[in-house]
Image 1 (cartoon, rainbow, N blue to C red):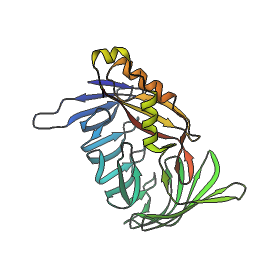
Image 2 (image 1 turned 30 degrees about the vertical axis):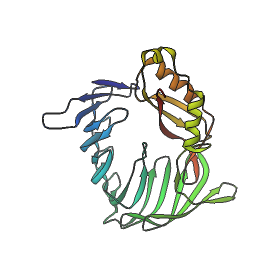
Image 3 (image 1 turned 120 degrees about the vertical axis):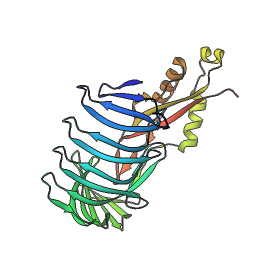
Length: 288
């Protein structure tokens, strides 16, 4: 099976080899340069990665080597700079920096080693003071035993604010946003996921009220779930709505229509600042 994903790359999924339960996955940039090589146990509605994988930059240099179990990174991972030099060695486990994924999955990692693009070591044996990119933020602080320790500062180029957070053995303790005028406010969560006003129960009630079961699908007795991806913007509005799977044209269109008309959400936050977050939800069609 071949899938073109928004023209950014081409994904090819092959049937499992004899004796294997996992599908082989190959991704290529538009110029046919290899982008990703790995395996998945499932690809509908989302990819569930399994086993070792490799990811590559557009210039052909290796970007990352990581292993997965049920879609979660496990063990030791290696990340590289665009020039091919080693960037970070990470150890995935039960503690460390917390990363939240879609579909209610998350994982932790420790930074074992970190090097700049010239090969100079900044973190060795889990210890060192760094200034590094963290999603849309620049984070600056101390790693101890591979985890954040003490005071960390986070800044964004597009916002005149600074976030200060305190950690102990990687555990977030407290945070403060400092505005350009000197005013500040505190927060008690390192990150917050977007939330429908009324929670997921409220969102499900919204769907049940607004979904109009298409007559043609009802006549044919077609049921199932349409998985929809969308972005909750920093102001709570919805954008970039996409289908992650398809079950029947009229059911797919109805799912997109209802999501597009959703009331504003409470936006997600990172380091105390509202951010745009990709959110995935299932829209169910059943007869009762």
